Image (cartoon, rainbow, N blue to C red; front, side, top):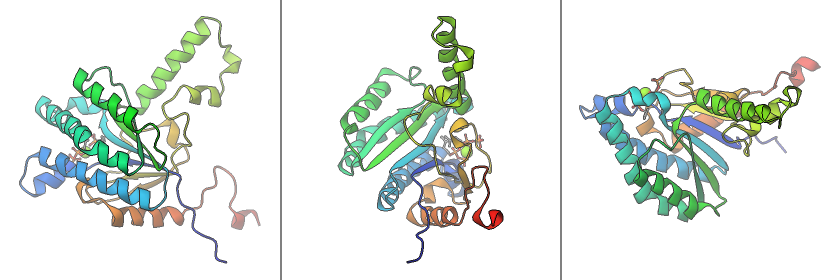
Amino acid sequence: MPELPPSPHHIAIVMDGNGRWAMRRGKPRSYGHQAGSEALKRTVEAVIRCDVPVLTVFAFSCENWRRPPTEVRKLLDLFLRALNKDVRELHEHGVRINFIGERSVFNPSLREGMAQAEQLTCGNQRLQLNVAVNYSGRADVVAAARRIAAAAATGNLAAEDLTEARLNEELTLAHLPPPDLFIRTGGEKRLSNFLLWQIAYTELHFSDVLWPDFGGDALEEALIDFAGRERRFGGLSRARSA
Ligand code: IPE
Ligand code: IPE
Ligand code: MG
């Protein structure tokens, strides 16, 4: 029997290109963000069809506050509306939603919407969907380092007991395996401060498709690319070790 191509357990996506998608149509950037939220729904359905159990998406970075306040406001409004509109459907699909990132800065209605979505879907098992909002990889590492420093200061952690595994425990997504496949849409070839620690050995796939056009076909392309990769984790391939 031919060996089945490996499929990823955890996919991480930087959903980029909404603004350019809208501008190419002579529309405001917020039109692109709206279309981007439809693309996320399509992609979640496609990921479920492909039996991938964990998906982590970058929706809003700590650096995105640098955008004009009107765009930020529209983005967050849209996020709240999508929470109210789409969560039930995601729940029916068996999606467990979890938000990562610093949510204390958001207004109470947004925080409440996030907490309700997490609560409603907490028993679902088909797909774990992590949505990163006001998240950055460096902030994640700093928050972990702070907790480690506090434990050390109170005598609860000796310097020599600080291992990779111990630091990892303090980071976002510690309870999940790290992403196998990282996808960035929109043509830019950079990480933009997403999941830095967690993607040390993740396979990177960059797609020129703008996020609002992403869906099953573009996902399949990424999965085919992934299936052709050889993951060595610093070791040797079968061919090279022969
Ligand atoms: C991604 O699309 C959405 C967010 C960063 C919130 P962009 O808004 O970055 O779109 P482009 O990259 O300007 O086209
Ligand atoms: C990355 O996209 C952040 C999200 C998709 C949420 P950006 O558009 O903010 O990234 P840069 O500015 O091109 O690096
Ligand atoms: Mg962008």
